[in-house]
Structures are given as C-alpha cells and as structure tokens.
Length: 203
Ligand SMILES: Nc1nc2c(ncn2[C@@H]2O[C@H](COP(=O)(O)OP(=O)(O)O)[C@@H](O)[C@H]2O)c(=O)[nH]1
Ligand SMILES: [Mg+2]
Image 1 (tube, protein in one colour):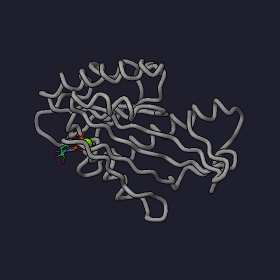
Image 2 (tube, helix red, strand yellow; image 1 turned 90 degrees about the vertical axis):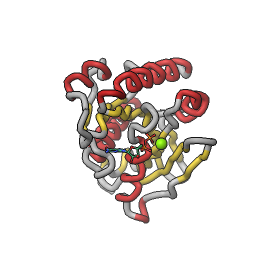
Image 3 (cartoon, rainbow, N blue to C red; image 1 turned 135 degrees about the vertical axis):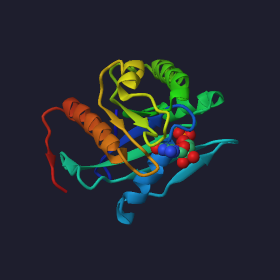
C-alpha cells in the first residue's frame, strides 16, 4: 500500500527494479535520474554492500498531477542481483507497490532471468505478496546486443501473466520511460481503485 503523508500531502509509491545481476537495473535508474529536472527529484542514494549497490531516489513525475489533492511521489529502487544478496532483496521488496522485472535479452542469460523471476516469486510470497496480482511489468533489456532472444520467446519464458512488456536498451534510454510510465499507471490505477472514486487533477 502506498504511503500517504498528510503533512506534505503526498502519496509515496515504491517501485522496485528487480532482475538478475547485470541485467541493467542500475542503468535504468541512472537514465531516469538524469532526465528528471533538478527541482523534482531527490538525490540518488547508494547503499553499498561489499560487491554491489542498492540504489534509490525519489521524484515527482511531471505528468501525473494530483490524486485527491495529493501529489504523487515515486521512489525507485534497484536490488543487487547476485544470489548471495537475497536478504537485501527481501528488504528492498518490503512495501513495494510495483515491480519492474528487468530481463537480460541475451540468449546465454535465459537461465538467470528465469531463476531471478522464481526468486522474486518466493520473496514476494514471504511478505504475503502475490506475483500474480502485484503491479508488474517486464523490460527486455539489451536489445542492442547481437545474440538476443526473440521477444516472443522471452514472453513465453517470463511473462506468464501477460502484463505489459517493453523492449529496451537502457544504455541509450530506449524503452526506459515507456517501462516506467507503464508501471506508474498500474500502481496508480490500483491506488485509485482502493481509495475509490477519486480522480486525478492537473498540478
Ligand atoms: N549493450 C548494453 N549494455 C547494457 C544495457 N543496459 C545495461 N548495460 C550494461 O550492462 C552492465 C550491467 O548494467 P547494470 O545497470 O549495472 O546492471 P544491474 O546489475 O542490473 O544494475 C553495465 O556495464 C551496463 O553498461 C543495454 O541495454 N545494452
Ligand atoms: Mg545494479
């Protein structure tokens, strides 16, 4: 459930970028952070572990406006992908309102993607969240590389729910904002359903 702050009149939605190590999660965040105007974003914060980093920052999307007079603030998080950081991943997933699964499209990464998706399933379950209902989108990243799987096959391997999915090349930014927009929409739609009958307004 999103965090509602009555003092600052903000709704805070937490979006977690999940996926195997080196699929491009950090690159997504860096690209988004670089594009958001200074006055609408917080600092990129890095929680360093020994080998990898958990990154996050928050921002106020320009285009979303207000819900019932509340501004919507988004917090974007990445998790470390390596197997041995599972404790960190669980922690970062806590309270997530939506998940972007960043898959590496390269043929040789197929196993890693599926393993990471299974790990997401398990970690959500532990927090009584259901991978079949949580707002979720897939991003098939690294489309610029030569030996990538066809999207149809990635869909078959990963997108069991038929949720929105996007081809991306996070190094150039291709598909990065399409992905973010899609997960934001899903999160907000769910929020609107829960608070019931509210509408968005400009601002
Ligand atoms: N060619 C290519 N490289 C990418 C792309 N996205 C990320 N990378 C590279 O893949 C490596 C791992 O990316 P990173 O964002 O750190 O992965 P993370 O472990 O998921 O956070 C880095 O060297 C990135 O520059 C992409 O779309 N295409
Ligand atoms: Mg990373």
